[in-house]
Structures are given as C-alpha cells and as structure tokens.
Image 1 (tube, rainbow, N blue to C red):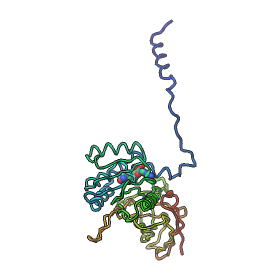
Image 2 (cartoon, protein in one colour):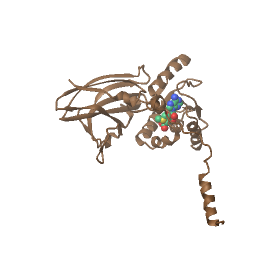
Image 3 (cartoon, helix red, strand yellow):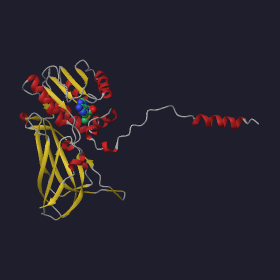
Image 4 (cartoon, protein in one colour):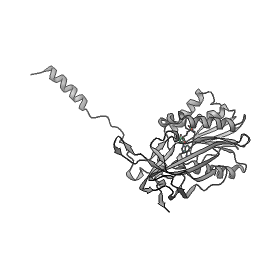
Length: 318
Ligand SMILES: C[S@@+](CC[C@H](N)C(=O)[O-])C[C@H]1O[C@@H](n2cnc3c(N)ncnc32)[C@H](O)[C@@H]1O
C-alpha cells in the first residue's frame, strides 16, 4: 500500500544520496615536496596579503623609506608587487612611472583593481611576470623589492635582486638604481624557549615580536653574522662560525634569528629607516646545558632562499 509519508522520505533519501557532480580531484602535495621552499616561499596568494598590509612596522617603514627615496618624476620598478601597496606609495611620492611586477595572475589582477581604486593606475603599470626575468624598457631610479623573510630563508629577495642587477647592467650599463631596502643586518642568539602549551611540549619553530617574546629567555648577547648592501656584490651564502659567552646557567634549547632591514639609509640625517622583522626561533635538536662564562660556538651554513631547516645548526661548548 502506498504510504505517502514514506515515499516522501525515500525521495529525500534518494536526493541526498545522489552521486555528487564530478569535481576535480584534490591536488595533494607529494610527501617529498612538502619541504620544497622553491614553491612554498614564493607563492603568496591574495588571502595572505591582509597580514602583510596590516603589519604596521613593515608598512610604515616602507611608506617612509619610499617617501624619502622616490622623487617627483622618478621611474620605479617594484619586484613582487602583491596588492600594489608599495607601488602606490611610490606613485604618491611623485613617481612618473612605476612597473609593478607580480607573478601570480589573480594577485596581479587584484593589484590592478586596487591601484585603479586608489587613483594611480595612470602611473602604475602592473606586469604579470616573473621578477627573475623582468627588465623595464628604460633605466629606473629606484627598485623596491619586498620578498623578505627573517634570516633571508625561503623567499628569493637576494637571488631576484642579484639577477636583476646583472640584467640591468648588461642592458643599461651603470649606475644602478637605488634599492629599497638598501641593506640588511642579521644576528643569531642562544636562548632558552618555553615550548609548553597547556602541558603539551612541542619544540616548533616560532616567529615572535622582539618586544613580546615572553617565551624566550636570553642566554647570551646576539652575535652579528651578516651585513650586506643590495647595491654591492654579495654571494648570498652565510657561513657562520660565531662565539658567544653565556651570561647565566641554564639550557640553551634554541637559537633566535634577528633580521633588521635598512629600508632607506639617510646619511645627511645620520639615520636609517628600518624594519625589524619578527624574530625566528629555531629549536635545537640537542639542547646544551651551560654555566655562566661558558664559551659557546655556533656554526651553520645556508644560502639565502633555503628552507627554514637549513638553520638547524651545530652548537657546541668550546
Ligand atoms: C612578501 S609579498 C610583498 C607584496 C607587496 N610588495 C607588499 O609589500 O605588500 C611578495 C610578493 O612577491 C610575489 N612574488 C614572489 N616571487 C615572485 C617572482 N619571482 N616574480 C614576481 N612576483 C613574485 C608574491 O606572489 C607576493 O605577492
């Protein structure tokens, strides 16, 4: 006998059990590619740009450095333009022409829209290209590039700028444009880190604000290990062998990497406009018990753009 209530239920069940329309299969990153920073560090889709736009020390530092560097009528290239915000600062400082180079098509499209909304699309041209091969059609005064990462790992800032300089010299000769940032200083410091999370111990790498590093206790002074200028030649490898003296007894279980970007150096004013990045704290595979006065040697070698794991260092008491 027909039971209309049951028929209705069956119809509903049939509906929800209907095979789903064919969807593209999930693209799963093969296990041996998960540490591939050649891909991980360089593609920054639009959903990560809010964090960058809202990072006050970064954005304010670049705004001031670009104001101090770009003159009315300047020609500017921005490598790795993202949303176009730094190109906008250059246009607002009076640049006559800005080439804003961004490799990800949907990010380049977003930049075009934002630059139009902000009234500078007549002077900023978004170029959807790989910054590693881009050259402007004419010499420029300033090159802005923010493909930066603490300790210069993962992102390709040094590689992209070195390649740009070589192509630029070959095509236009000297002098080189001014770079924003102009230079960087990097240091490493032995620390003790509290890796306890509600009773769960997990020694993971951390990014911390220098002024809010409540989990980190200093064990020795930071040791400066690199200093370079983008306009000068650099080889992009850091071969570090630093000696530090322990200030107290304890266990060194991690290294803190500190990176200061000198966005614009203003010799006339005796100052620079800097961006202190978040510090990167890397846990050591073998923590080292130390006493006050112990001399501890830190040794590691990596190339700019390498994986974070390249910072896993050798640390030993002298
Ligand atoms: C750290 S974000 C900075 C974006 C923007 N300049 C800003 O300061 O907000 C770096 C940008 O460079 C782009 N990028 C990375 N490698 C690139 C390459 N080889 N060529 C062009 N763009 C690249 C990324 O997609 C990303 O949008």
